[in-house]
Amino acid sequence: MSEQAQGHLALDPSTLPERERYHLLTGLVVPRPIAWVSTRSAAGVPNVAPHSYHNVVSTDPPVVHFTSSGVKDTLANVRATGAFVLNVVSEALLEAMNATAADLHPEEDEARWAGLALERAATVDAPRVAAAPAHLECTLREELVIGNGHLVLGDVVHVHIATRVWGAGRVDQEALRAVGRLGGSGYAVVERVRHVPRPRAADLGGPGRD
Image 1: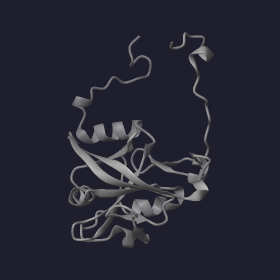
Image 2: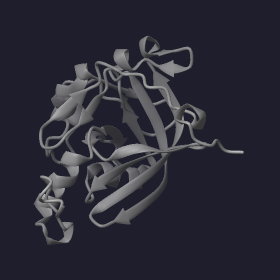
Image 3: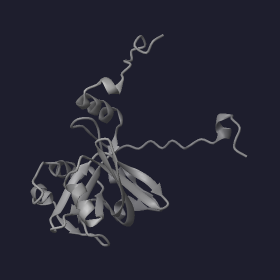
Image 4: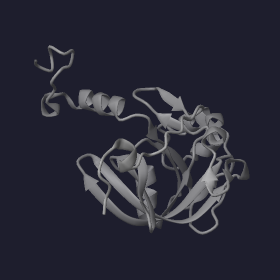
């Protein structure tokens, strides 16, 4: 039986208009962590902007990444200073985060327009969003250009985290209430967590590793 007969469409991404490919991929790869990146320009102007392609690359050493679609102010600033801060977006900051996505001129301070207070990072030349429940201070490791994406890899050199969301060596996800990006203008909030322990081979009746 064909995919279409089962209620599926068979799509060749190369035949779709670019905008349709964008909506297809960003609507299916969900929810995506939001990299709320704060930087400082070479002239000293702070910048805060969200990027919805973001994840952990390595924990040893600790490396994260975000992707800029094209060369925007964030990327220009990271290139100039070699530093950035990833601010975790909680539900309470959703509207403010969205406000910082406005297409302001490079000399404008998005945080001021969004009513956000910034404070100095501890180790890098970039500000951090004071109200964010956690901040990852990063130095630029590498930039990779893949298609229309500029993949920015950063070494995490310092972390700030609110005590209400950190305890016993774990992050309390229900207290964090992190926001994830969906397709279009949609967002998801982590408010209920299901814990499903990872099985061992023996639990599944299969042979384990020697």
